Structures are given as C-alpha cells and as structure tokens.
Image 1: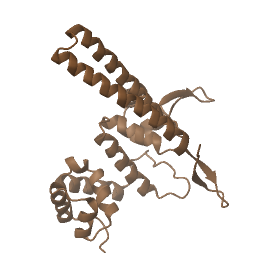
Image 2 (image 1 turned 60 degrees about the vertical axis):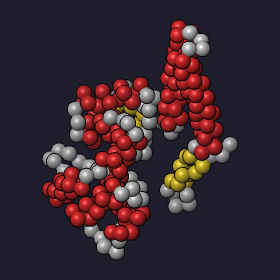
Image 3 (image 1 turned 60 degrees about the horizontal axis):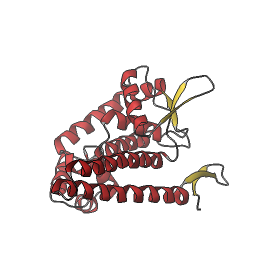
Image 4 (image 1 turned 180 degrees about the horizontal axis):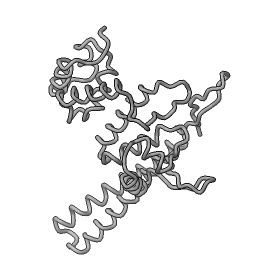
Length: 251
C-alpha cells in the first residue's frame, strides 16, 4: 500500500470519485490508500460538495512549506499531553473545523469551537485563543459572541479574575435545547398567522402544517436529547497505568 503525501493525480481521482457519488472506501480502494486518508483529505479541503483537486493540492503544499520552515518566530505550538502526536492533533483540528463549517457554522466560529473542544480543560482565555489561532482579539470576541448565542460556550472567571470561555461536556445538549426553543417561537408565530389569515384558507392551512410539524419535531428533539444525556454521557476514568480513559455513564 503506498504511503506519503497524496499526489496531484490522486487528488484528481478523488475529485472524480466524489463527482460520481462514490463512497470514501471505494475511492480509497481504487487509490490503494486507507479510507481514513481519503476521508481526512476531503473533509479538510471543503467537504464532499466543495472539494477541488487543484485547491487541495496547493493547500497541501502550503502546509508542507510551513512544516519545513517551522512556526513563525514567537509562536509556539501548544504542548501536547498524554504523549499525543502534535502534528496529528493539528491535522485533526483542521478536519474538525471543516466539518463544523460544512454544518453551517461560520469559519472563525468553527475554528474557535474546534480549538476549545480539543483542550482537556475545555476552556481557554481570549489571549490563549488569539495565540493558538493567530487571529485578532476582535475576531475571537465576535466568534465567542456567536457561539454563546447558540449555547455552545459560556463564560466564567478563574481565580485570577480572567474571563475564560468554556465548552461544557453537554454542550450539544445545551445547543439542541436552545435550538428547540427557537423552533418553539416559530411554532407560536405560525399559529398566530392562522388567525390573521383566516382558518380554512390555503395560507392558514400551510402555516398550521408548519406549526404542527415543527412542534412535533421540537418536542421529539428535546426528549431524545434528554435521554441521550442520561445514557451516553462519558467521563474520563483512571486506568491501572494512571492514564484517563472514557467511561460511559448509564442511567
């Protein structure tokens, strides 16, 4: 099985495979590469709908150039705990960011969310985010405001009175609840429209159907999120060797 960096020709084959609707595993089989290699390549370069071989190849060359010449003066890569491979973590953070962007989250918000999620502490200060992401304080502030409005992060003060931005273990639960609340507002407005437009009219019937659908989905979402929170939540557990491993908490 070949190793090393993907060639430009291989990237063109990946693009053709995506255009033909092939699964990552099938594309990887044709290239004689691991499926994980193809998955990582696509997700870090625009996702299935936005992948372009030429842009992906240029991006790869830029990353290789940065690695050869090292980080800019004054910039140090965060120290990795638990014996992690720093380069593998950096590449995974890029993939995580791309997936968040593909879900509809703006780029800077995705970068901040990924950066916070990959810290063991689950929190960073504004200055730490600025240093890690090499962006302006204003960019971090704007991203945090957006993430906070979506219930993805919260703020707290540490012992030195510094403001920290925190990603809780149940961040997706909180975000889903916030989303369900927003949906409930749409339901209420839709039902108000039924009275305004007149019951029995085509427009009112459409709004009533919207309200019923979103009401059912919203209630089902909250119920499923609460059940999953109780059954699937995990915490690190100490092994005999003293390292942490995930442990599921079952209700």
